[in-house]
Image 1 (tube, rainbow, N blue to C red):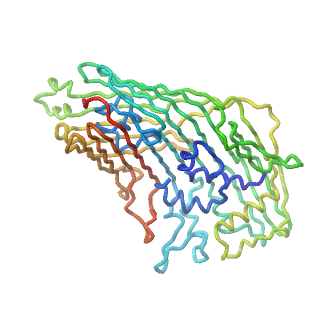
Image 2: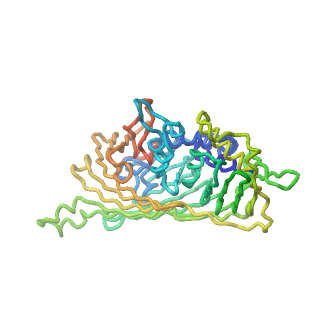
Length: 507
């Protein structure tokens, strides 16, 4: 096994649309070869690509997607989603892996960081010790929601993926500076982490009102079937270079659960490659999850507030939800491969010139990987297979909305905190929600913490009583682009769209 698997694994964050259209086929995106594609594609233009819905849709009363953010909230009319078109959502976020950190404007031109006119210090000072990229995809397969008395039911079947990668600064230092054999250097490539979880979710939700409609409470139970789990951890990896020989210290592990991936070994029992099963196989894991939420309408206390400065509160609603709490237990891993020990590399046998500035980033990465391959061997871990547990990415949502113009205009503020593998991420979104007509809803606003006044939120929902409901939204529309119309400064991007058929009367 070569460390080339690292680059192959990074590419799993690129092809979410292939994931949906091929329904869990991993062949295409695990065979893509280079981080170069990621930096110029997924990291620089992520919209083409954690909860299951955009934050801007939280306060839109005619949007069916809001129930994914808080199961107590539901649209004002029932719906039946188009198969595979009812809800598609993709979200990507990073701390440093955006175009602004990898291109530099000099003498009227944008230069990629590998250009010889960009010094290593100039590039690396904007790169963090750990650089992460997280991705979530939700593709609705079947979905429906309907009123039953005062309650609202919804059922949805969806294909979901969580993926994350953490890349240490030293990896980019190595790509920029090369190994160098003229003097002794030590490169620490530890803390590389790549993980992907693909699963199918069947959710059944119910919300009910209490106290004459003042309180809405909702709960969604989820049955999860795990299709594939991939985890590559580099606990420690160091390379000591010099004129005579290079020494590699490695402690890395690959663990795969599921039947879609299979490890292949050469005649010396050294891990060589991954074989891909193109067919959909039975699940390899099962799990449970839930969402829970509540909304309280403060107008219930209007008599108490009337005639006091606090009367403004009677136009407010407050809400709270905890979503995606759950886990998947994998029956056993299909393969466990480990590299542990010390290896040596003869630099005189290397054919790649790391000092040649004409080489592209792809060439440098290929050179790094082929060089490390000479000193690292991955072998099968003979520990007996055992079960493992994967947790969902949970999120806490807290919202407050003020009605400016009854049934027409409202202002909402939503705090959303996601608990991710490498960090906890909080966003604060302010939105104005306008419904000029019963069948038309518009929302616009800004997400402050990651938008930083460089992006804006927008949602459009066309919802006639009969016909088709169309919904499209994004929390991070990107006005800052370079002359080639590629987004530069954004670190977070998402998009959601859906088509449903209205059923029943509007409430």
